[in-house]
Length: 149
Image (cartoon, rainbow, N blue to C red; front, side, top):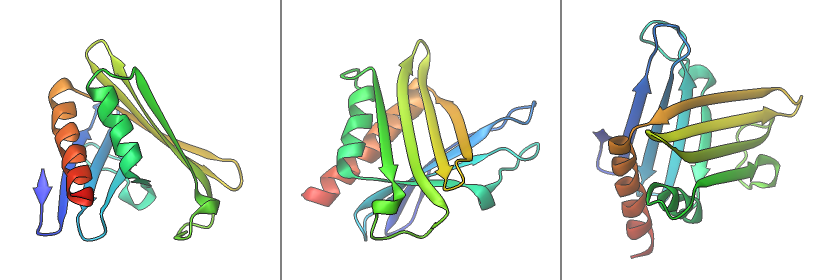
């Protein structure tokens, strides 16, 4: 976990020998009161393609849905953002992004996707262990707490 004065980051890096691993970072930026997910595909033995990362900004309601899955209140959470409706569009070639998290037998399945205007789809998926999910739950809970109280 990486922390600075205004930003708290929890990172999950899962490289694989087959080269199809992934890395996911959850950043809570207190200054702007938002949690960002950044995900990247593996592009080498121990390296990731951060130049082509997928970014997803979580609302506090999105954070609560993910917490509900981790606390076994929901089986899964599917989040959808239509980028074209955002006031803060930075990637004009992106049509929408989705995040899904679901409970598995031995942890959680995490998937993030980005669809571009030309309909091409980029998907990154990985697993989260039970202990990684506990840390994520704490980060998201603290983000909600710091944003509202």
